[in-house]
Image (cartoon, rainbow, N blue to C red; front, top):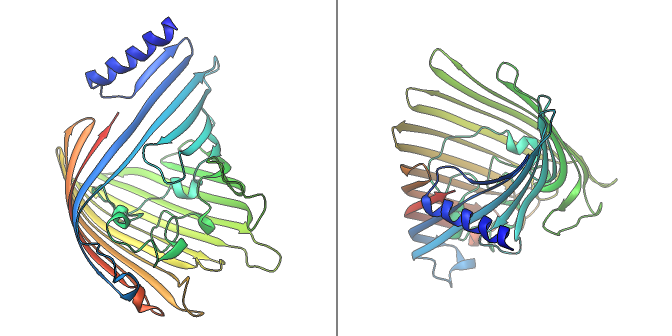
Length: 365
């Protein structure tokens, strides 16, 4: 009990002191790293809706928060191999108290991840620069503009309607094994395998629909004459039931930076699913000058309409102009203005458009 009390007190005092790095407690070769973040956004929204949501009032001031605490114990063996565990606790949840939870094995051979985590294709993606805290891709704007509820349906999150950071058939945070190679002259390769869509949050999918998810990815990072280049490519396939089509996904990304400016974008495409086939792309530019950075980011996603007639499309367009200021190593503030528009060709009553103006702050530890 005494040792536990001292350890807890040490953590508290370190946090109060405002240490720049995560709290780390060591005991011989074993260490415990505790880190995380808390982000809050305060914004004013003006929303225009079709008949489906016309009875509700979405205009006005609102606040959203996003927070996680990461527990990362690790052990370094005598041969230099590091074994670790990552358990991510959601600070505010909607049925998913523990997010990713997995084990890592790292050494000269590269890195292996075993557990509930995204694929190599997702983790190695390069996309458009965006310094906002709401993001044009995988946007938090859904908290202010209601295109994720009765309108867009289930194909928004991790699908091509809402992001270029996608998962094949939206197989997100599945129990999988992934391998990342060491970088050779800036090039890194990766491969993932997931049996099904079962996750570490308790959701189980025992070979119910689609199985044997295989993802392959490559990522490059290098500099040439003062110019920074980052690029990615990914491909994934899975096995559908005998009567179905095997879902397939692919994507590419590129960013180029020089003298504080970064220009980049990405493209991804999903095929072979019942209601999630589509494509998405983003493009953006950012500029960093000391602690201040700026960005302008555009996203465009299009999918099969999950409600409409065969062949009908639904689309989402988002543009975000943002500025961010780094107050301290662990604290940053920002401001943004965004416009986002969701449209369904077959069901225009579901159309939603919103303009959001807000400020944000993020604390990391």
